[in-house]
Length: 137
Image 1 (cartoon, helix red, strand yellow):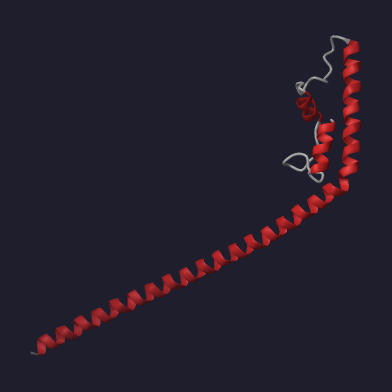
Image 2 (tube, rainbow, N blue to C red):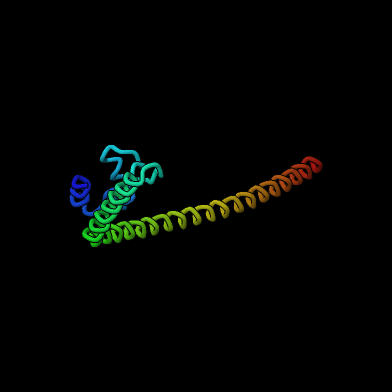
């Protein structure tokens, strides 16, 4: 538990990648026990009582650690929230740029179709003029 407490202090209140404090299972794992080590087995009443006391001790330690480092955790959470907001603004700007580009593309496609229609019309007129010129010769 002392090693975990040192890690929390050195990381400004952050213990895990999620930013949460240690769990009972994490403490047990770090101590070399299985996550179910402190669970009641129902076979030996004295053992179950001892395990319950150990679990309560770990829970008390966790609360003390959480209260000690709560201001640091709040600062980290606020920094993360501000990064998320900044990231959100960038994503919104990117989405708007994509939307604008799609509109420009659509306008260009419409203009292209209009120009194709105009070219077809002019070719038809050219054929008509060439046909009338050939018949007049």
